[in-house]
Amino acid sequence: PITFGAFGSGENPIIEGTREVAGWTREGNIWTTSCQDCPNEINMLLINDESQPLGRYPNETYLTSSGGSGKNIIHDSDLSFADNYWKGSQVVIRTQSWVRDAVRVFSQIGNTITLSERTSYDIAGENDYFFQNHYNALDSEGEWAYNNTDKEIYIYSTKDIQNARVSAAYYGECISIRNGRYIRIENLMLLGSRLNSLKIDNSKHINFSNNTINHSARLAVRIDHCDNIRVDNNYILNTMDMGIGCWDSDHCLFTNNRLENTGSIPGRGQNGNARYTGINISGGSDNVIEYNEIIQTGYNAISFYSQSNLLVKNNYINGFCTVNTDGGGIYTWHSTSPGNRILGNIVVNSRYDLGIYIDDESENIEVDGNTAAFNGSGIFIHNSRYIKVFNNLCYNNHGSQLLLVRHGSTLLDYNEIKNNQTFTMGKREHYSLRARFVNGEHNVFENNCWADPFKKGLINSESSVWKTKVYTVPEWQSLGYVTDRTIPKTFAESGLPDTTGYVKFFINPSKSIKTLDLDGTYRDLDNQVYVGTVQLEPYTSIVLLAEERDQ
Image 1 (cartoon, rainbow, N blue to C red):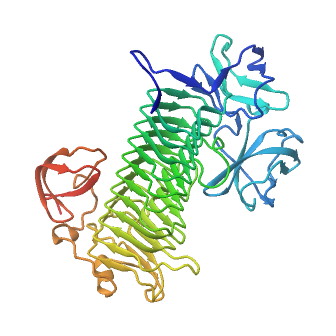
Image 2: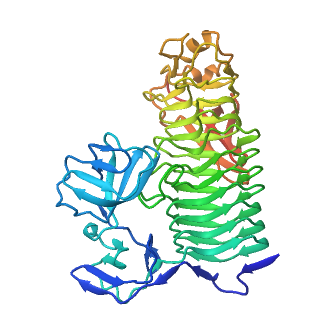
Image 3: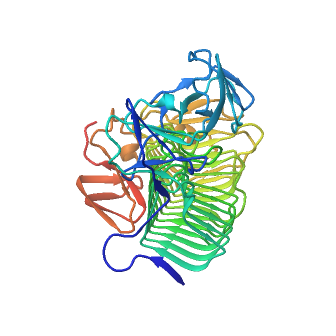
C-alpha cells in the first residue's frame, strides 16, 4: 500500500484546514479584519489552535417562541429589539427534541422573524431558540462572528490579539481520497477543517490509524460508497457535528478509537436528523463498531440505519444526548434488515435519555450482554418486533430499567426478554420494568431477575388485560403472563430504607480482566458469594449487596 505518515522522531506532522487571518483593527473591544477570499461560510475560528465560541444571544439561556408558520416564520411576543437588529444572523431553533437547526435570518420585524431557508420541521408552539453569528451578539471574551456579505470577521476581546495566532477554518478537507485503493494514513494530526477532516469516497482498502483529529467544523471522518475501510486507534476530539459518518459502505471496521466532545455545542452541528452524533452508519452491510470509547456526545453516541449484519460490540459510552434528546447511547430507527447485533457494550450517564434505544418498526436485532446504568432508562424497545433482549444488566436508571412501549397501530410483538438483570434503588418512579402493549401481542419474559430489594413495587404495566398499575415483583409474576425467576430471598425482601454502604456496582470497560477489592462479603444477583475480591471479565458489570447489614 501507499503510506502517508510520520517517520523518524519528534511530534507528528500537522495537516491544517485553517488559514491564518491578520490585519486586525480595534474599536472598543471589537477586533475586525477583512478576508475577501474567504469562503461564504466560516464555521470555526481558532486562537492559538483553540476553538473560540461563536457569538450568541442570549449567551447561555434561550429565548422562547410563541408560535410560528410553516418552516420559515417564527413569532415571539416578547421580542423587543429594533426592526432588523438581528438581520443576517442565524437563528438556532429546536423544532423537535432531536433536531436543532441554524438558519439565516432574512428579516426581523416587530415580533416576527422570517428565515432565509426552511427548518427541518414545522415551527409551531413554543420552541427554544437563540441568535448567533452576528456583530450584535459579541459581548464575551473570544466570541466571534463572520459577515459573509462584507467578508469581515469580528472578535470580541479585551486583550491585544495582534500577537496571537488567529486562524479560520478555510479548506474543506485536510485529507480527501476519491477512487483510492490500498492506502495507509498513520501518525498524523488533522486540525481545523471546514467540512470533513478526512473524506473517503468510492474507495477500497484504506487504513486510517494512530492519528489525532481536532476541531473539525463538521465531520472528523466521512466515508461514502466504500468497501473495506479501517479506522483504528485514533483520537477524535472537539468535533462540531459528527465524529465518524459512514454511508452506503460495506466491510468497514471502526475500532479502538476515542471520541470526546462530539456535537457538544448547540447550533454548531448541521441541520436535520441524526446530527451531533459520535458514530453514525447508514446503509451498507457487514460493518463493525467495537472497542471504542465515546465520551460526551450531543446526541446519539452510536446510531445505525438501513444496516444488515452490523456488529456493535464492546464499546464504552459515557455521556450522550447533552444537546438533543429522544436518543440513546446506541440508537436505531426503522432497522429491519437481518443480522444486526448489539453485544457487550457499557452505556452510562445520560440523565434523561435511553441507554439502548430500538425505535419505530425495527426488527431482528439481538441485544445481548450489555450494561446500561445511570441513564433516563436502560433499554427501550419502541414499536418494534422480533427483538431479542438477553443477558443484559440495567442498574439504577432514572426512569425505568427496561421499557417496552407501543404507540399507535405499530405492533410491539414477538420480542423475547430473557435472562436479564435489573436493579432499582427504591426511588420514586425508578421502575424495574415499564410495559405498554395490548392483548394478543406475543412478548416473552423468561428467567429475568427484577431485583427490588427495597420493596417499592416497581413494575408498571399497562395493557388491554392489565390496567395501569404499579406491581410488586411477586404480584406481577402471579399474573401468569411471565415465567421470570424469583430472586434470592437473602436480599429480595430486605426492606432496607436506603442503599448507603450496602450496594456496590462495578463496570470493566477494558479488554483485560479486572480484579476489585471488597471490604467484606457480598452476594450478586445470582446469589453467588464474593469474599475480599471480585473479578470482572472485559466489558462486563456486576451488582453486589453486602452480606452483613442492619435491618
